[in-house]
Image 1 (cartoon, rainbow, N blue to C red):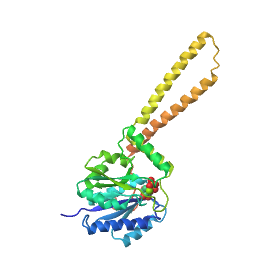
Image 2: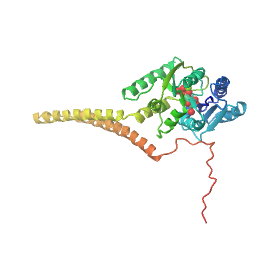
Image 3: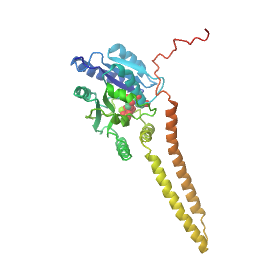
Image 4: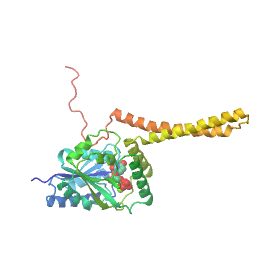
Amino acid sequence: MRSPRLTIIVPCYNEEAVLPKSAHVLAEILMGLIQHKQVNSESKLLFVDDGSQDATWALVKELETQLPVVTGIKFSRNFGHQNALMAGMKTACPTSDMMITIDADLQDDPQVIPEMVARFHAGSDVVLGVRNDRSSDSHFKRWTAERFYGLMNRIGVQLVPDHADFRLLSQRAVRALLSYQETNLFLRGIVPQLGFPTTKLYYRRRPRFAGVSKYPLRKMLSFAFDGITSFSIAPIKVILMLGVLISGGSLLMMVYAVIQGLLGTAISGWSSLMTSLWFLGGMQLIGISVVGEYVGKIFAEVKHRPRYIIETDDYTVTQQPALLD
Ligand code: UDP
Ligand code: MG
């Protein structure tokens, strides 16, 4: 039987510090798999340059000449980690029987890749890499991650805790994934929805090999917020509940004020009036902004803009339409 073809997809954003090392580590693992006939000799290491401003792309080009397994595509600008993963899978899918996505910084243990491939041979379409030790992450990162997974579970989004974007997907699983057309992508929420035989593989997460995290707090928060609003309308419900509670409260206030008026007790009221005014104004603004977030999402979806633009693709129009007959 023909051995299957594997593509390892590595998103890179300003990763010049780690790229040569990770390319060599991953290439070695891939060559080992090829030698042991676990995957066929056409298997590749695909770097997706997410619009880096440093020497990342030059390094990919150089690695292509040094290591025959290396190929790369380059975005025209930074489109984000999730889009880089999608582009990698879309590019590799037609020719690959399985695809593994892994970060460029060697935080996810590449040594478990052979085990992932073994699970594929044993019949798994989806193998999720799950971190069982995050001691290399900062306390803050771990704490926020825990809160995030907890919150997502409570609002009904089934995430696999401590599974990030290190996973193997079979070709048919990727095909199913690519049929999700949404512009706002949250892969780790979508993958568990795909179904197919799925297994988890535990590994230890390490510190970044070199360079700094490309997920500063701002990006992390917006990623989390995106995750929530892409999968659930719970925030709108929370706002609704709050609105009902507050309006109920203000009704009681009104009754109280009327009774005071009837009793003839002077209402000095100014401060309570102002506080409730500001409070309600704030609540309304929050409410509008949450609804606005969803409207914004709909806006982004209906425009059907491309998720990413690959600079290395040939977009030139070769056939000019004939203007004059
Ligand atoms: N990354 C990317 N585009 C971005 C941000 C990050 O392709 O806009 C890549 C990055 O190069 C790395 C992976 O996504 O390979 C994970 O990023 P990072 O290690 O910085 O995140 P962390 O591990 O700190 O969560
Ligand atoms: Mg990392």
